[in-house]
Image 1: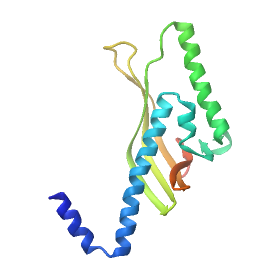
Image 2: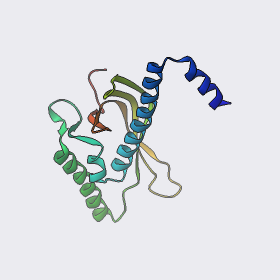
Image 3: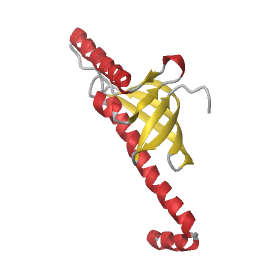
Length: 165
């Protein structure tokens, strides 16, 4: 039934609008995948996968303290990974799993190659024992400037404490 309704709706939409609708639907799916890859790279402290979600000149954060470019982003992730390893070496306990989530996302296409993704986010840590509760470490909202480069959506700027909407 859903396929029939979609087919009917598409016959009522002009050809130009169909191509825009279809492109944006495909772009939304690609952006969802990009942000999933970003979160998994961050949660698993995988520097190469993390850097791969950004443009070569991409940045995390805003203002004078922003981390800019692949080399700086890689170094930031390697630092987080080292901190976890140092903590484990000191305590003898593996740090709890980390989970970054986004919710109430609003994706706005500026044009066919630029988009802004706004959302609320949380950083949660799993409990440090099988029955221990997890804990929310931080919450906030984000503003991501996304660009299509060579046919692939990437993060240009990810700001988790934006000063503008």
